Image (cartoon, rainbow, N blue to C red; front, side, top):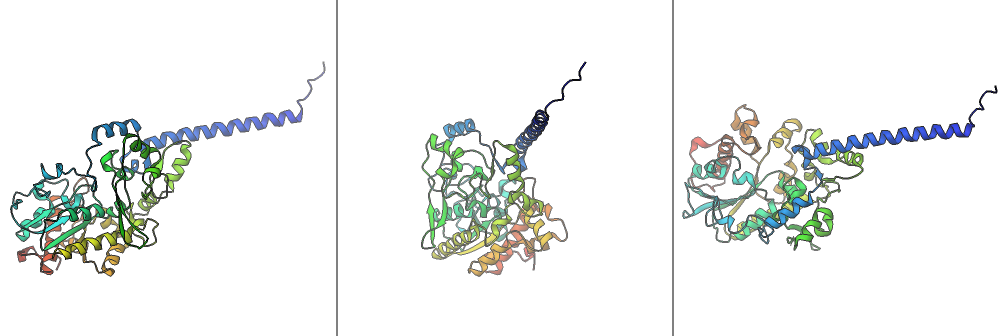
Length: 403
């Protein structure tokens, strides 16, 4: 018998190429499947979900039907009716049994949940503790989730208030909220009342308020699919440098973009996720914008015969950053505010002194807000600062801390 004829060389080469193509495609498929699983696991994890954008349109539709009318035209939240009942008195301030609405206030406070006093009993927020410490009503107009912009607008709306001082509390993450129009992009829920306006600089380099966009159900749903078409002034558009990473095929690219996200790298370096926004050259322009908003707040206070005091609200991450790098995440803002003539008080040094060697973790509760003890210390150091500036009507000498 004749031996079988050898396969043509070209045919052998084609088979080899086909084998390697199959192997590569199979490997890529396995990698993509693994990436898809990893992305969906990350999307369900609390620490990373805010960095990914994978909106549930059915959930968004249900939220619209349930809450579309629960929106204030300028401030977005809370509703006017909700702002004058339950936890709040008729003036819109937080209820304070020690100093009720009928008592003339010596001052007021504006800001987010760190001013309001989340995660502690109503009477144990630091503003309420400050009121007892200095012996007068400090009207608390804090609102959960607010940025500096909304705090300023809320101050403008409180035309009846005439106290000796007005505190503007700034939590480090507020600088991000000032360039953000939809809180869902920074990890809040998918809700129509979380869409807000924002300030920008106009052609004459002055502040201009861009109001909340007019929305119907279709436009609200479009916001989740084509965000820039609905919010052209939103800085944190999904898929952009600092916005959440949009989830979709190919998932390998999603993981790659997530791995390159500035917020993730800040965490890796031991900084707070939002620390980049405090750089003067950051493309968001968040620092100069926040300085302008803060200055407008101070000017309004002056027109009312009050003294505006900006009080920084350090987070656990702020202390951790200071411990590792020698300055807090928000230090560039404090320096820029002081250079702009804004009266700003950073309580971090005095809080550290008041702790007397204890770990800074002791002043925070489980959700990252000030604990009752932390609120007491903040009230003491801010009260001492008000006394030093001759703004507090009374402060026991025993309450003085931090020198």
